[in-house]
Length: 193
Image 1 (tube, helix red, strand yellow):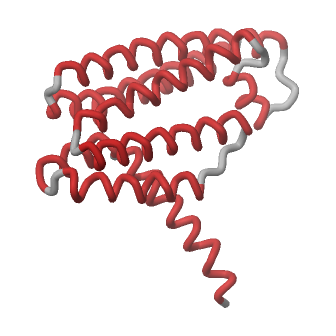
Image 2: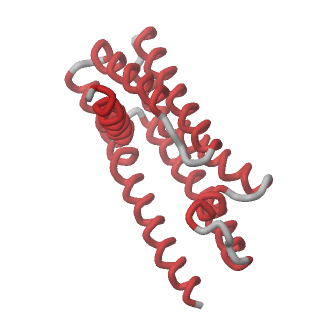
């Protein structure tokens, strides 16, 4: 009976850490407004440690990326706590976009591109037209990560936590959803053609 509960607890722990990391900008904003670094940084550190321990990706590169991002988050939270400097926490979205840009960009130079690898998980025998399409989508994501990271960096430099939270915890996610939605529509049209 206890063994059956372990996978559920692990899945719940994994889900909670994913939610906290997705809500990172809001958590930082609320933490800085209400509890300060003494409360916020240890909570973030524990979250990133749990993320390191529970991360599982479908591709080895994504697993390595997920663990690297968790380690970076842990490093930022620990340094912020030790140095009593909250500004460092704001740079996590910049690191996320930079690492995603590097991963997607590198995959263009060392095929197959990330999007093709993900597509092959559900459709192992991609036709040449689909392979070309996945390369183009990977390029689009590279442009997105560059621009999104640049705007995230600008919000860090601006030093306005409300602006930083609005962009990194709201607008950025809306843009990701919009890009995914547009790509899905285009993909369906390409598949029909």
